[in-house]
Amino acid sequence: MTTCPIPISQYPHVLLAHGGGGRLMHDLIERVFGSAFTNPVLDTRHDAAVLDAPPGALAFTTDSYVVRPLFFPGGDIGSLAVHGTVNDLAMAGAQPLWLSAAFIIEEGLPMDTLWRVACAMRDAARRCGVQIVTGDTKVVDKGKGDGLFINTTGLGVVETGARIGPQAVEPGDAVLLSGDVGRHGMAIMTAREGLQFESAIESDSAPVHEPVLALVRAGLTVHCLRDLTRGGLAAALNEIARAASVGINVEQRAIPVREDVHAACEILGLDALHVANEGRFVAFVPESQADAALAILRAHPVSAGATRIGRVTERGEPLVTLWSAIGAPRVLDMPSGEQLPRIC
Image (spheres, rainbow, N blue to C red):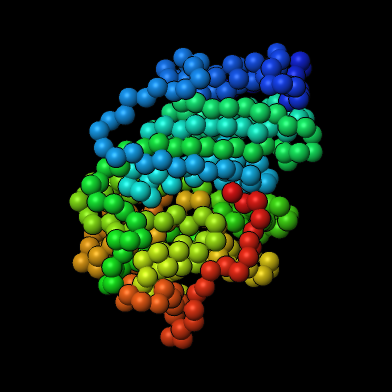
């Protein structure tokens, strides 16, 4: 991270700029965000980014990030905003290309904190091969914004002619999981609650577009993809079951949960299958292609722990059934409430 381009001695904190103008607001836009995110499109300083889109259907998504604390083991709100938006595009089988970034900043936020977040977004965008091409900055009164909120929008180009989504799911499909679950939510909660374990629980926040695009480019039939954010694995499976009107069976012993994550969940009274992730997804593929899909996923570090966790049963009642290690079934329902507030 380079030194903040705004002299901290002059502006140690972000101050309220009434009416959206003022010297500080100009410096924030030009010297912080303009410096961090510089690229030919953004550098035009126009009211809208003009983009030359390659052929193909466009994928378009938006999300907001309100995580607390702003910095947590394994990530921060800046990299999380990039990863989350890139991953949403990847779930449509799209190559992520461009992002917007809008910042809602609370008056009094330390300037070096804002610069750290901007640098984290810059670095994450570079790693993901995307450009931040437009954005906005607003400052709200102290006590009205909890530090910093970020909204992002993403555009990408879909690389497959077939639409990836719940409506394509078919009975007999294999359900694949890209890795262990529960780490992001537990990283946030342990940092927030001051819990300590022998090994630190780090967020799984990471971009997953590379293994997803590898599946698509290998010519495999990918029926559905879903990242396991709010509500975790349980919510994602239930959403897909309801949208596709199918039953889904999953094996509990096939779902990887780290021991420290399991322990933290027990202490806090949580279920790891309901805890949010920021670098995990499920994929529904024909049974005949499951082994090939797993081999591709395991070739990428972010999905090296990919495993088969279940299958789609029949059309009808949208029910997700979890089979325990001793062969006892129970309904894996949607989370009844928001278990973990402010984790994404």
